[in-house]
Amino acid sequence: MKANSPYSGKPMRVVYEPDTWEMRGERYRYTHIAFVDVESGERFTTTESDTVCYNQVANQYRKRHGIPYTDEMISLRSRYGLSAAKMSEVLGFGTNQWRLYEAGELPNENNGKMIRSAMNPKVILDIVEYSREQFREKEYDKLIAKIQAVIARRSEFHREADDVARVYTFGRGEANGYAPQSISRLHSLLLHILKQFGNAYKTQLNKLLFYIDFLAYRESGMAISSLSYKAIEFGPVPHRYERVYSEFDDVEQRPQMIHDYEGTILVANANADLSLFDEKERQIIDMVCDFFKGYTARRMSEISHREPLWMNHKDVCEQIPFTEAFSLVAL
Image 1 (tube, helix red, strand yellow):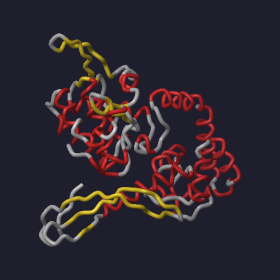
Image 2: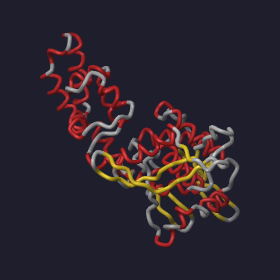
Image 3: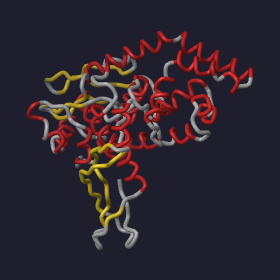
Image 4: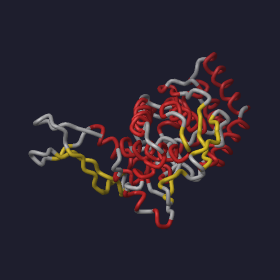
C-alpha cells in the first residue's frame, strides 16, 4: 500500500500500529494504517487504508454475530436471479438496503441473522411463498422453480461441504484471514499460480501461497485461499498442503531428480477461472508470482526465514496469525 504526500508529491512512509475500534458498543483490536509525510511529520490516511482498517473490524464482528460476508450475500442473490431491490423487498428491508450490504455495509444483527437463515433454500422458499403478492405471476413461478431446483441439488452442496471440511483445517474466520472457503477458488488459485510462476516444487508453492494470502490480508483485510499456515523449521507452510496439492487431477505431481534428491514438481494441466477473483486479488497473485519468479526453493525459504511472523512461532511450530501480516518485510 502506497501514498504520496499532498505537499511534496513524494512517497510517504507507511506505519502500522495496534489500535482498538468500537463497533456497535463492542471493542475490537485491529492494526491501524497511516502514512507519514517525511518532511512535515504529518500523518494521513487514504480511502484504501481506511477500508482495510474497517474490514479488519467488520470481519471480526461478522464472525462473532454470525452475519454473512459480502461475497456470501452476492452469491445468495445471484443464485436466484433476483435484483438487489427485489431481494430487499422479499426480506423486508429498505429498498436500497441490500445494495448497500453488497457494497460492504455491515448488516445489523437482526438483518444479518435473517440473511443467514435465507441461505437455506427451504427457508427462502417459505419467504417467497408468503410474499407471493410482491411478484408478478411469471416472475413468481420462475423464482419458485429456481428455488426448487436448488433444493433438489442439495446433495451437491453437501458434497461441496464435505470437500471443504476435508481440505481446510478451520472454518472461515481469523485462522484463515476470513477468506471465502471455496474448492473452486482454491483450484483456480493453484492453476493460476502455476501458470504465472511456472512449474513449482512444493516448497516454492508453499511460499507463494503464504505470501499471497498474508499480503492480501495486509492490503485488503481479507486473505484469498482460506488456507491457514503454521511455522515449521523450513518456513511457513499451509496446513494440510499435501492433501491440498493432491485434491485436483489437473494439478499434476511429477517426480524430478535434484542432484541426488528426488523432489516433486507441480504442473498445471488446465486454465484457471479468473472470474472467481476480483481485480485486486488478481493483482496480488500476479505481483507475488512475478516477485519470486526465477528464485529457487532454497532462496524462497531463506527469504521467508527473515519474516518476523515466522520467527515468532517457529520454535514450537505454531499457527501463524493473520493479524501479524502487517509485519511482512519481503513485500
